[in-house]
Length: 616
Image (tube, rainbow, N blue to C red):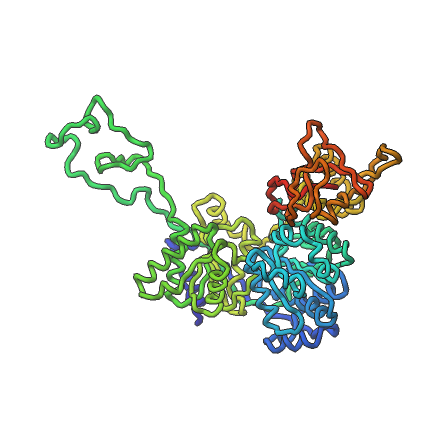
């Protein structure tokens, strides 16, 4: 019996006073393999077989064939179903057969991008040159990546902040861009997802500027209406592949409610009664009739005499963090490789610290095989923890949701989830981190002292046997659309055709509002003499700012004349009028400039800056 199976037996043999409220058994499932598609590159097929991948599953081949034929596709299957191979097959086959093709991979987390880099580099294919381009990339490596890498792995924030603003330096890469892979696309929901949707539209616009027409391949966990959500995300029609043909080991899923404990577990005894003559009288004594003792309503009774048995004291549940630490300790002692998900960074550190202390007391030296993982660690520390977990050096790891997304953690036996993560999709994503090698797995949801968690552990039908939530995002949100249009305008002048790309009528309304507020202004050609003609639908910055920005500044501009890559556009001198004075240029256009552009702000944060400026 495996360690996870022996640990699962503890939940099946629970008593009446057990904190386990429900145990759900998910049976194993067999896979359905198919032959390799005829278009797959022989070098890629040989590399897969060398790694033990004899043949793809049916859903992998179906999604890969659609992507190879040029259709935008989303592969929405369960956790550990092999979605990575579904997009690696068409992307790497195209790179191997077309010496000029490039591909861009977008992941919501650095850990996921690093995991995919290991997977792609592990194939050992020639001339692919994969590389990550994110905040951890050294600046001396970024130029090499722009010029030589053909498979760039990044995230939405770096795409918005580091690639699109300097798209001129990525012109060759964007012109040859054949595929854009968006992994874990179900995480792009709400306001954040709406911002990412416009970042992807800006990517499409920048690629089209240089002649690129990439095919989008999206990977998602099981969700409601994956085709509709993916279509709203990228702004193009998408075909969904949802039938999961991969094998899966059995899963034991337990719901755990921490036990109740009395509010005051022990009451201190008093050496003498307050009414005893041997006790001195004091103003603060309860026996004093003149001055009552100050007492907080929530304070614990100071003695047995103060305790009234008629009053029912409230009971509280044991901390979910403490329960998680105890279960993690038991799992490590049993030799079960376990991952504990905690909702906060501080909680993850606390669970790891408690577990290490308890293990050192039980088995000296065993505490060194437990660690914490969260965002904020140095790149080297995160990669070292990931390697130790994959190699088996670590038996227990307390992590935030940084490891929730499809990182391939082969060999894990159990997952502890401290508190309901908020959605059923996230719940199954976290539970799916265990058993990825096809073996038996154990997942435990530990309820917090929270009404929602309490309801779920006593109503398992709300979790099991029900579809997961749909991914909801609204790219037409004016509070998202306006700043994103400012960012797009700072990258290149917006035309009427671009407004259709950004949503049509909502984009026109947003541009009208930006123009009325002075954040953007339309360009209009110069008529005969000194009278300007009617405005046109296309605008452009003056040529002196676009192609010769390093020269002396024009009259009325308050930007510094010192050459700077961060000051490519100029801001107007202060003006008392509601609109700044027009700037004339050799391109026969004029534009007003506003310091309220948000191009250099992080996604979802409307932080005003003074450079660069907005124009539409």
